[in-house]
Image (cartoon, rainbow, N blue to C red; front, top):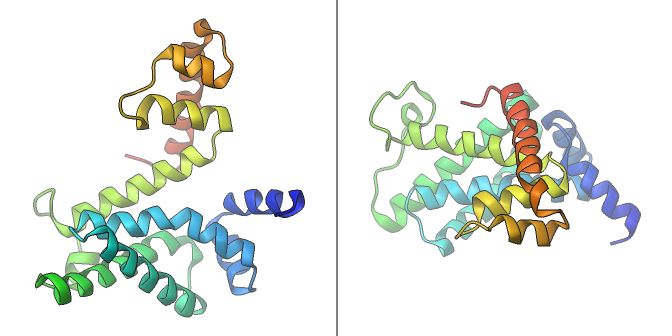
Length: 197
């Protein structure tokens, strides 16, 4: 990919839902790539959280992408894109689980209604997944340094030490704590803008 194409791809990853949908409908390949990058973890996580194997989650992912691509012109409100994808992925997961695992198919009430059961209920799981998606999108909007720092401190097992972070990011050991605080403050601001709870 050329530098220009790469920069367009990076810009596309930051588009809001309305811009992303419009560009996908216009046949923009970079927009579709940005769509896949943004939502692949969300779609996979729905299937995995409902107990499907990685192979079956891959099948669900392909089904959902084809369905979204075909049905995208019917999406009336682009701002509901994430919720719409969650519903499509949940139904595709439920169909797959029912067929291959003998599980009860989720009803529309389970997926869309005000389900108030235990934390393991389908509605609660979907709410958690949607919150995870908000967190992932917010982290992607941070600077590359902040993204890598957060990954090393919070998403790596075991968590990286400050010495390891300093060496990787080219920071003085004493400034890692300040940088961490600054990055988390920026992330907190993005999450508050999105009413993350």
